[in-house]
Length: 269
Image (tube, rainbow, N blue to C red):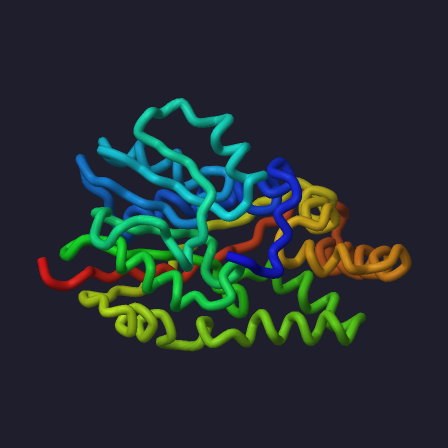
């Protein structure tokens, strides 16, 4: 799953996204569903936020979790104490598994930030899921539902034309358009399609906690920050700090974060 997403350090990823995906995971599982005895595949497991939440919600027969990043997989493997969980490197757009071998295929915070052609991954998830099984995915509504990320993108875009172009390419992807997810799921041959919005809050103790994961170069926004020279980066940090503080002393800030979640059923049960 090649992308403009920097996977450099698992600890920085935990600060950038892992702590928030652990909050999102129970809401996504409630929408996607899970049942005792199922054989599940998770596409894009990262450091394991959804991976290790799933067995808490049902007595699974097997959970196969794949990710493109060896760095994130190593961190997930180090935490794994469950023999039912198998973690391996893989490409979500070219799964190695035979047709109809899983009861449920799930993915969280992978589309569209990591996958250039998300429809290919949805089609692969559908292929490996049995008739009557469920295909579900959730990802941040970056244009309209993730102000902590928009704050960085919009601040950078005001300072740098290249950032404005990168922001527009990111936020302008067709997958964010109204109705895009149900259309994609239908195009993959799925039925009984349901899309929902899932909301959490991102709570930061101070500006440094907000800024450091991006400054480390982690993730998609970090990939942009990593291209900046010292003076550009310092200018971005200064303006971003002002946007974060909004005239108040440094300290806690809380931002809403909304994920789009879509699920569908493989026909023919």
